[in-house]
Amino acid sequence: MIEKVRHKGLALAILAAAQFMVVLDATIVNVALPAVQKALGFTSDAQLQWVVTAYALAFGGFLLLGGRLADLFGRRKLFFAGVIIFALSSLAAGFAQDPTQMIIFRALQGLGGAFLSPAAMSLILTIFTEAKERNRALGVWGMVAAGGGAVGLLLGGVLTQYVDWRWIFFINVPIGLAVVLAARAYVPASLPRERERVDILGAVTITGSLMALVYALAQAAEKGWGAGITLASFAAAIILMAVFIINELRIKHPLIRLSIFRQRNVSGASIMQLLMPAAMFGFFFYMSIYMQQILGYSPVKTGLANLPFTMTIMTVAGVLSSRAHKLNPKIVLSIAPLLVTAGLLYFSRLPVDAHYVTDILPGIILMAAGMASVFVTATIAATNGVAHNESGLVSGLLNTGQQIGGAIGLAALTVVSTAATKDYMASHMPATARTMAEGMVTGFHHGFVLAAGFAVLSSLVAITVFKIKPFKDDDLTPDERRALQSEESMPLPGA
Image (tube, rainbow, N blue to C red):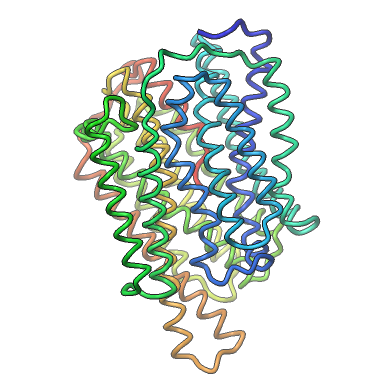
């Protein structure tokens, strides 16, 4: 139950503004990465990627916990907590003086986002109870989320180029303050459920395991696979994952009920939502560096160059959502990753002196079309036939998988690209500006090929794991439809 809503339109605007802040931060940072690297002294791509992965791992690792805490302790309370944590950590990130501080504050931003996003979505679903008004509200939510991605690309470039990169974080502070003040007046409080044990151990161990894994990959890139710190980090990741699994099997109210993966479509969609963002995170990370450090693009030009990705995502997702009842999900999920594969292989031949229209734009459109098709259709396939009380868990798993898969994938791509760059430079001594640029691009090529491999694996998962047939829109239950709508309107990682 919730309090009486004074003005539903204002409540929606406030909640959407908070989500806008989270989505804005995902894209605004990508454009500023070269400036952040130079200002704070990041020594390598393996270290720089933590600016992206620390946020994604904390966001994904605590997302399901955030949704549960919102139900147990009150959605508005957790929404306030998420906004405040996000705004304060953004302020701290803006004042960061070294890589360690930046990485810590980015992780705290991810924690704030993990509390904010599910609470905001839950509030919308409880404020707008009638089907027609709920659909309109979710449509607004989706447009704001997609618009935030586009605005972030441009605003990140403008702030970095004409003001200072630190303002990509400072801008969240006034937005967060305005959201909190307005939400106190217009967003209703919800009554918490009967208190149950909260699986904090599960959230901490899964997040810790993934961070240890990414750290191990980063150390492998810099110090080698046999280094003591690399092996110790891999061991820590395995131990923490084992603790997580044991805890989930024994606890009465687990963070993730592992038996859900017995359903083949849920397992298949979850695996695909790990593999596909692994390719997309790497695309944005490497293309931002490539455009600015190799091609000499300004931050603003880089933002504009990436806009077709967001626009294509929005267009394809909208068309597929409206025609879902006419499509066979398995066919779409088998073919769409191959579009992404084609785009990434197109990038694997990028020259040092590239032309945007012929060397970059076609790959962007191929990737975006494939990504949108997977994200929309995987949700339909996973939620179709799932029990009403499990649709929320499935949707949460898919969103969590996007963040975690992207973070781990980027770390793996960095290992490959760093090794390729080192090998190239070792064979092209003495180093010149030209050979250094060629070495970086060679590393990017190898990273894009590995990312294409992730996409191919995703297609194979669709072919071999999914057991689905074409279904009519009428077959979707209200809960399944809401899960689909909420999934479509969540921020795409790095997009």
